[in-house]
Length: 420
Image 1 (cartoon, rainbow, N blue to C red):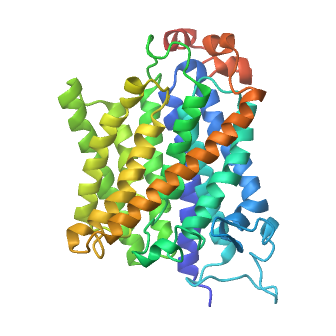
Image 2: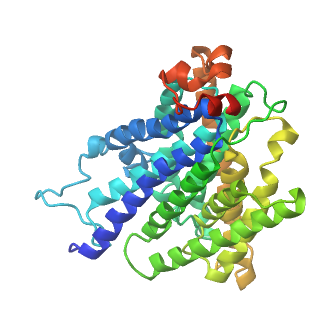
Image 3: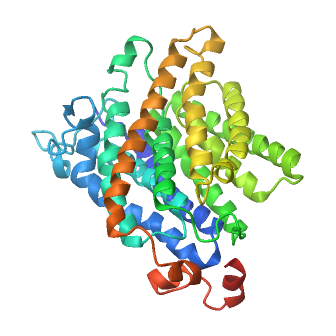
């Protein structure tokens, strides 16, 4: 295959856009927490970049796309340190079927692993030791993310080469199962194992900086065009379709969320708009290449409304998902993955495709939830004896100062006091 410089440029751009999403997430999450813990929240995202960026080069790529082991994961030693993933026997760059060097694909996929584990941090804001978080990142991407990526995209059990493809080929265009269901299920387990923040349910824990939240949401939306458009793996019509579907679904999700807020609470909020952005982006991620733009609007508006209701479940059931990772990423990820079975233009139920696609989408979604939850539970319980939580004093006085020796607002003591 000859080098396609246009496709290569698009994939390098897409990889850069997806990498930008994690700093964008840091702003989004940072604005949502109280002023005394904004730096710690942002550091959790940057820590995910640091740890995962190294691990992906060493064994992450190989575990995701290396020689298959039982349909569950790739052999970590098959291409350890990217051996055999960059050059052919003649010393030339390996080129994939789209005319893009394989090393560009490595970079693109690494950014997916980074953002996925960073998403989980929002569920355990304000209360976790930074060292425990970094250790969790290293183990979780190894035992949960890489196997899931292999199962769905690397030719494993949940892919078009797996056993369910005899019913209908599973569809996950850019990561409904691999990224959002995976992270959302992990977030729920961690929130349950680690426990609630001090004062949860009895004192206000409002976002300290809503403009920061909206800026983070905007950067996530911008980066998501690389996330979904780049998953076409070249600059073609599918990339264009993914771009338009991403925009349509996200815009509709904002409206869905705001309508629910207005009817239920009497006000359409900036936090609701920003959260609606993320709900729509999550829902369209697995479906971006399989739906029409009109179908994407339907998917998005339902996602926004569902998630607006779902974020309140933590109060009903008593788990402290600090920044609504479960209510947004797990719920919208499930809906986006299963919604393909209704709305896919070629195989969806509403387009005369029967129940086969719907059944397969439900199966892969359920397996993804169970797999991620079980693996995360084991990891969380192994780490617990070493200590997940900071001291109560550190949690009350401010995790930024206690853990990192600094505060976000050195000259604004009143801001910190009010946020506490």
